[in-house]
Amino acid sequence: MNDRAASMQDLSAFWMPFTANRQFKSAPRLLAKAKGMYYTSDDGRRILDGTAGLWCVNAGHCRDEIVAAVQAQAAEMDFAPTFQMGHPKAFEAATKIAKHTPGDLKHIFFVNSGSEAVDTALKIALAYHRARGEGQRTRFIGRERAYHGVGFGGTSVGGIPANRKAYSGAMLPAVDHLPHTLNIKEAAYSKGQPAWGAHLADELERLVTLHDASTIAAVIVEPVAGSTGVLVPPQGYLQRLREICDKHGILLIFDEVITGWGRLGTPFAAQFFNVTPDLLTMAKGTNNAAAPMGAVAASKRIHDTVINGAPAGIELFHGYTYSGHPIAAAAACATIDLYEREQIFARAAKMAPVFEEAIHALRGTRHVIDIRNIGLIGGIELASRDGAPGARAYDAFVRCFQKGVLVRMAGDILAFSPPLIIEAEQIAELFKTVGEVLNEVD
Ligand SMILES: Cc1ncc(COP(=O)(O)O)c(C=O)c1O
Image 1 (spheres, rainbow, N blue to C red):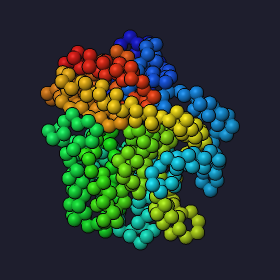
Image 2: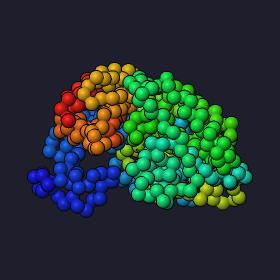
Image 3: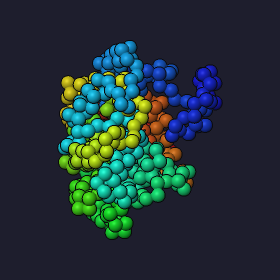
């Protein structure tokens, strides 16, 4: 254990999520404060946030309006149930969210995280098919390398082997996976959507033949796969998935936990790619991560079928104590007002070319084998060290932090998703530091 760790409070009680606990606790990295584009570490250093926390603080940290809304709501009413009761902020937040969701996905079911949003969307898909007399449609199609959170549903449709391994015997029984869309040989250094790969959507036809459409409830994909290391959909791929789903009466779910709320320069990726799903999950940027909150947006057809198809009484037996929590809802209202007032999505669209140029300028840097980007999301894939996958990116991540820049790693991919308020000089600083670090690490 290093000196700081030894002098600090006891770190043993907190079993940290998705963390190498032993490694971390022997050399901890602690964040103490945040404002705008920066964290301050516990030893007083300013850290440029290249990841918007965990892809979530889209408006920048500790924005005054959101802080004030949270404080006011906490003082006025801390909690109120939303089971057979209601409170104004939850309705207001749903209405504000529905102003930005695509197509007719205007019915908002509140949850507390991306994982809960995914499991909720899967359950709504089942309830929808059952309400229309096709209760045998229980199969879900996910995709290799997908990340859909950590519930049993999300883990089952997810496709990151390490996330499934310990639980693989207890996954949902009727799930299959599409192939992922990354092919470095065919599409390395694509700027935005790769030209190669739309045909991979046709694999869905193969799965439909294999399982029969009448057993398939929904296909779920991240429009841009984030946590697995930034996989940008090939041109035409999402359109093709939509067509095949429509042809076979299969619902299409977009998991927009990362891509939602302006990350691509539009409210959701659905608008960016001009493909409208039937259900859409969100979390993170919904309220700038000021309090736990997620949501599922459902189309009119899905909502009306479930609601009108049920006998009098509760229509959907699902919900969480904290669905539409007043403080999270107040934060969402203030956040969406801020997004609108500062035109933050348009700002992200404006900065995307600057970000693209800066990240691709690292082509040719030591260890780099691919660079991918879209909107304000970027990934730099590094060659793995022999026999130690992930070690090089981990070293780069630690060294970046020491040099005052927070980046994210997924395997040997460095991922970037700064707050959407990032300035050109900060983009330059971010990638300058990354370039230096890549030249330093083994
Ligand atoms: C696409 C996607 N879905 C779901 C989740 C899970 O969200 P949470 O960690 O809030 O449960 C994430 C988290 O990063 C995500 O990226």
